[in-house]
Image 1 (tube, rainbow, N blue to C red):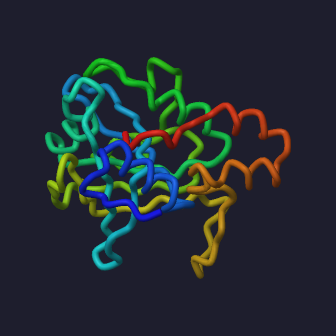
Image 2 (cartoon, rainbow, N blue to C red):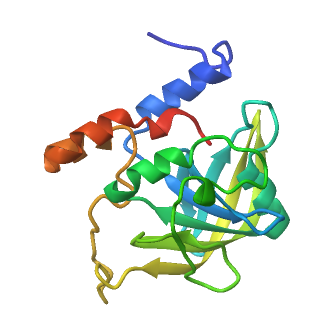
Image 3 (cartoon, rainbow, N blue to C red):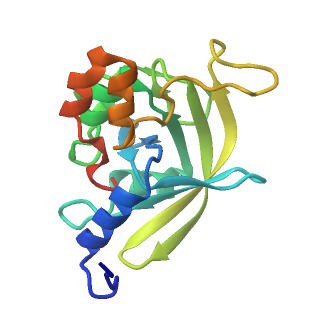
Length: 206
């Protein structure tokens, strides 16, 4: 089957990319609302773009009502964001934080997701994450109907429990929460099978 992307709908194009570019990590992005509350949102269209400087790209579509994502509004206002790499113990919280809430309403407060501050001047991250990046806004690219936010990592947090001086570490399940990792997680940790099957984090580019 050959599909012409100029004739398929945006939703169809998303489904093609979402189901074929796998596995991939999910960025759990923290930003700060104007009222000081913390916004948490997962983004599945996320990838490193550069090593020097270290830059990430996050594709941000609009909300269901057509307005810009809260994360996008906050990043362009504050010029700051923190990216956490999620592991299995955070799957439920990650899923809950994908819920659309009113602007200025914190997912962390609404769903009782504890936070920790890693670096002054940057948004806090979910407590217990093993890897996180504190980033400044680098650029915004408008591509078709969406925007790709480029974030430059200024600080990198690696938990002492996994850190090695030679940086050859492979923390379990870090970034392993894309759609195709659910089966792998269930194979490695059978008791997680039920929670993996109940979550569909990777349904839309938040």
